[in-house]
Image (cartoon, rainbow, N blue to C red; front, side, top):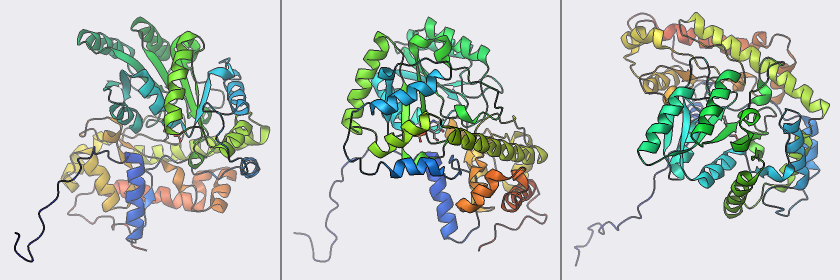
Length: 447
Ligand code: PLP
């Protein structure tokens, strides 16, 4: 009998499968924690569009709150027809029967990877969730470097080599994911590169998953996304959502366009099976609002256009600040991301702060200077690559009034609260490379 006051023997605990929080959501929580501790934080980590919901879109949602039923797993006919129209206007004629809607494009991508059921090539760097989702569904993400300056697509010859190696090893690649335009780099791959990726995909029988969630946020309004669905329609799935160009990420509504034909029909059946077991159907009121959004009424097009100009102005201003501080920066071409390489400052960073790896750099930026960015390692880069993803869209304002002012501003970088955040970024970057012995930028003031 155990002696009195002795602790009871520990019971065996269930063994869990550890799944870390997605780095983008984790940085958001880390920033919130620093704020609760009283630190004034520059929130440059989370990929949220930072634009108010357009009132007309909000009205459509409000008009549909009584829709309480589940509805079809693939989404309502009205939404699928509207999404088909959206793609058809972009040179991708689409049969609504091959459109599947879901609660965001993230779960759709997860369902697609599960349905495809084989190893998947992902660009390095690429959006945090592709590799994480592939691992979750029990397949292997194979990271393949992107061509210089062209984020979002694997280098085609490296992709071909990887496909040959995988086949020889008895685990052929099943798919390749591309992001057009790209997160984290904010760049758009060229048509030539996309065509070569399509050729490799054909040669090695790979399905192409083309994530085009930022397609409407190309900074150049005349530029077009070279979708692989144009060059390899028989094997390309395209995904998009309301999250970025309409800043409705919290509404959770995405759509996938599957290839027309027998393969697409088979993939659709599996995807719907998975959807039926996980989310049943996309949220009904959101579907109503999304049908309106994908029909692209002029007031929404104008709103997206203004958002695009704001994103372009601030992403470029941030790129300028990093370049002025000595970082290597590829000009952003889309969305609200900048992906500077602080490699040229490596010696100074080591000397001043003992920083050797990117997580050390981003840790220092947040803990000491209150600047939240994501390390390139979250996107599949080696830890010693000093590349960081900067998402400046949460600088547009702390409330909708400020954000609307930023949206309307002819020169948004001069809007007072944005200008002061940009200046603080420059001061931080300057302080980063100042020797620790010399006067340093005061750590972010507690408010
Ligand atoms: N794809 C990319 C490249 C993204 O950056 C994101 C969000 O950050 C998503 C997909 C997921 O978007 P959602 O699930 O909101 O549609």
